[in-house]
Image (cartoon, rainbow, N blue to C red; front, side, top):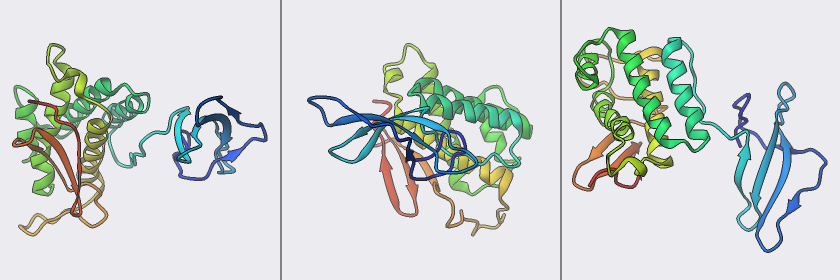
Length: 223
């Protein structure tokens, strides 16, 4: 698992305290620590003995995010989204993804009467592959769904939708602050880019992220 403190992946070590097995279930609970000698963060875990998978952990595992060269207000918004996601507060996480876009537009001087117009203006302020620019408005819709309290889709903003939104936002920030793109017609995301297309598929009403030919689908957000 990924350490919630140092954010490094590793095989967490037992602390010498026997795990507790829950009678009549395939679950057990125990204590582990980060294997990094400079960290050793103490984590409580729930394990599914049947599948051998981690069922839950506290502090929770969080999505990794490289904040190098990203302005503090943008970092703060996305890290709050990631924290909300880790604690299963998915609607709040989607709202903070939207706030991240607001902060990005503000940092780059992209003006407009609303976020839709500001994101359109952002295209003239930054150099990004067209796939990322096209996906920004779809990402706005995810946050828009989360903020509409009377919407039928309000409660359908869940873990998978937010994970796709966070991963796509990370790629946008990487493109804006951490990478140099060619401005020519052949400009494409590098092979290291995990998410190259994040689109709203109107025919099926599903969010989709494409990563080098692999498609991960999430439940429909709108009908």
